[in-house]
Image (cartoon, rainbow, N blue to C red; front, side, top):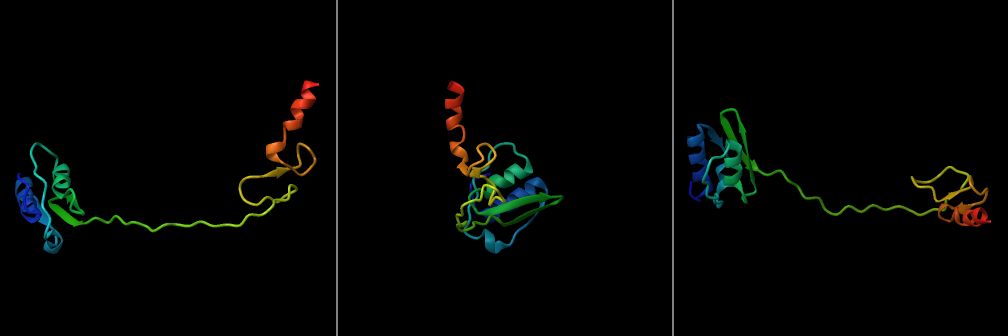
Length: 123
């Protein structure tokens, strides 16, 4: 099938696939189909014909439906919060503990626990 007006290509596709094509003519205006050469499943052929048109096709029973793609683009999402100092005796704020009293019995940042342990083990 040569590249041609999308409405004509879909009509030809429907005839060759023995399917009824359902599409609003307004959404087909101004669109060209890609050329189609080879053996394809009905869904593959339909997808190739609609490539670049912003339209989606669906084969259901004896009917081929063509409609605008339902992809949406969301705007940027901003996530905010506030910083707070955690009390090592609890309860914690958030998911990650920053301080602990279990290993040293002092309010020591977790990243510093273990620095003094190496010196004790070496002695």
